[in-house]
Image (cartoon, rainbow, N blue to C red; front, top):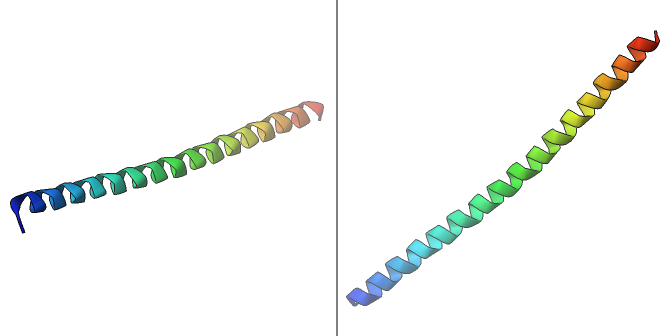
Length: 60
């Protein structure tokens, strides 16, 4: 195996590692964004429940 062949294999390995890392970072970001949206939705529901409770308490 020549030096250029080894260098080429190392370069391909580095690129494969970078692409793999990039893919997993994108996947993690997607999961995070979904969780953030779910949290936002739950917080909105909680706020709505608090508002409804306050209205009911005023009526009593």
